View (tube, rainbow, N blue to C red):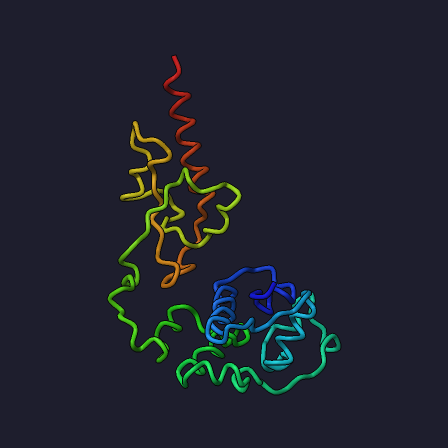
Length: 221
């Protein structure tokens, strides 16, 4: 609740990367100040705290907000000012570059930056970029057999697989004699290309299981 993006609190059904960017902004402020940025005790109280600090959204500032299930122009007071970076504890904790980065992470969805844009902010100018994976060049291997089925949906959008079929290196999954636990899915770095594809882990697992089942059937005496 404490790190939940306002669009989710307002009933948005689509969980995009911007939701995680918002959570990152909340944690960034918390690490800098040592205090929670928004500490509501319920979803409605959390929204009140966000809007009180950042201003109540309207169709002008957040196009589409009026269509969200939990939004109503009469549900919230009309707070107009954005007091996020005028908070004394935040001003004391962050330099000018940090004060530029924080609101960029916590803007309403249409204006919120993504993770790649965040890494290009002046706040990270002194970061040794050699420690970061090059975009689209480094991957993390994830064993298929170690993905809990209930969590498979969480990896939606991370898998570098073409919907038209398994091609190239991905055909390695089907090699005879290999165990499921030895198969790997190539995943793009989440901080760089999160959401670049749309093929689901669960679909990949189902395909592999189906092919394995077919093979077992044909090998029966």
